[in-house]
Length: 194
Image (tube, rainbow, N blue to C red; front, top):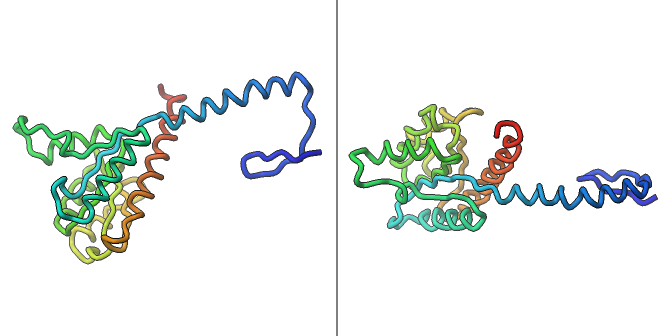
C-alpha cells in the first residue's frame, strides 16, 4: 500500500478499479483548469498615497505595488489616473466615487496630515470595509492615527503598521495577500450569485 497525500494529510492508499482510475484521470486536469482560472480573475485595487511627483520614500513603494498588481492581472490604479479635472467636483468626491467602485482601497499615507485624510474616508460606511491602510509607527501619537485606530473594527477599515520608511516590505506583502483573498472570494461567490 502506497500512501496518498491529500492536501496536508497522508492517507493510506486503497486500490482503484480500472474505471475509477480512468475517471480520476479525466477529473484531475479539469480540477487543475478550474484552479488555474482563479488566478485569471482581476481585482480592482485603488492605490492612495504620496503624489506621483512626491519626494516621499513611499512614492516608489506605491509605484512598485501598482506594477506588481498589474503584472498579476489586476486593475490597479492611482486616484490621480481616474480624476477628471473637467468635472466641477472636488477631488475628495471623485475619490469617494472611485472607492465605491473598487474592491480594495490601499492607503499609504506619508505624513500625519495625510493620515487625517484617510481618517475621513474610514468613517464613511460606503467604503470603510474596503480600506487597507498602512501607517508608519512614527506617526502613531497624532490625532489622525489615533482616531483611525478607533475606527478599525472587524467589519470596517483594516490598519497595518510598518516600522519606518526604510522597512516597508509589509505593504506589498500584505496587499498581495489581501488581493489574493479577494480574488478567491470572487471565484467562490461566482457560483452562488452570478
